[in-house]
Length: 391
Length: 138
Image 1 (tube, helix red, strand yellow):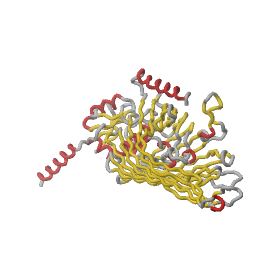
Image 2 (cartoon, chains in turn cyan, red):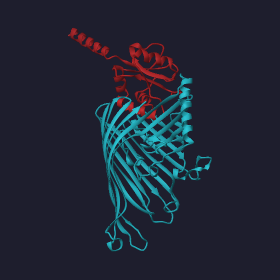
Image 3 (tube, one colour):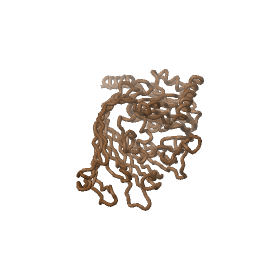
Image 4 (cartoon, chains in turn brown, blue):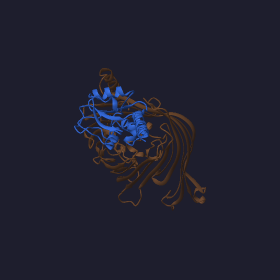
């Protein structure tokens, strides 16, 4: 980070400088931020039913966390630079600051989310190279573009602030090459994307060559999406193939495939977005089922151009690592929200969410003892206010 | 009877004049001569960003709602909300520039005439030889 920060700031200064030097050029610099006020209450617990004769209690708490706070933060701030280099080439840089970033106090993070150049031969053929967010399902490519989304708290697989959810498990985070485009005929638009990316971030080391991030594997992420849009109805199918780093638990790089279906529809001021993502992992020499599932559906209503209300439900499979024992549980979220735009560049948001789930698993706490019935419970309530500002 | 017919025709013509015809205009560098409504919808949604000759499409629109905009959006079956969402998505993903919005027909006419690859729409009565008409909305 110490090396990255001056580099990023230097890049920004050069970009801003180039606006001043070439005031009439096509360089655009703009961005947005979203600040939030969050009231959170609740947590999770993992409790085993154990014989009192051995453990001195009938209920043994293996893991627990409870929170109750009211916290303001700058959830996210992005600065974009875009330049149409000529008729075919476009460059794009996206710097992202999250969690009220402060390096001195170790808060939040500063990330070079995107830096790519796009060669557009035609609308049917684009080639994007650099660091980019791949086109997968409906939300992945726009998950961090907060003014676009009605949410403060995004559907679970896209909300990186949730503990115990590694968003990298559910959706591909980065690619370095993407070929994409669309073909239209009347009101029908067919779109496609195929991408190649690095392996997941746990395989990437910054200690190999001079502090640069190096993907230490020879396996990569491969993925694709095809979609069809007819007027206000759109749907798509996406898939990826890569490996999940399970070296800390079952000592393997496990082949992983993701298959996603997405749907968007709007009519009579109502809008609907939905995704279903199934993640299949194929570990060797174990019967352990590591598969995961995520889905969400959001139904909203636009009262007018400036006011909308929505309800969203999502489900995700989560894993809790209890000293090598994996407890698999399902977590659900239900969110209701309102968005109001007093001007085109400002969105005021309010939402209430309930995160909940109750699962039952058999855990082996000691190899000399039988597996014990274990309850995994999640119960968190969140109320949030936010303002999202484009600048 | 003849007088009644003339009165009805006159009223119809007056009503038509009040709801001015709108013409979709492009810069003279644009190779297309006629553009159907479905393609205009895709151009204004920024799904189509290049002309047939490979040059970039530069879209102009009005900064606030007016009769021309209402007629045009209705013609391409898009609402202002749909288009604003699509523009913001394209802008925030870096894939296209949101249309430049202008205040008057004269500004749209002047910008389309002077910007290679440009497209806009104005009252039909204002169209002149500095631009090329590619569709007329009655």
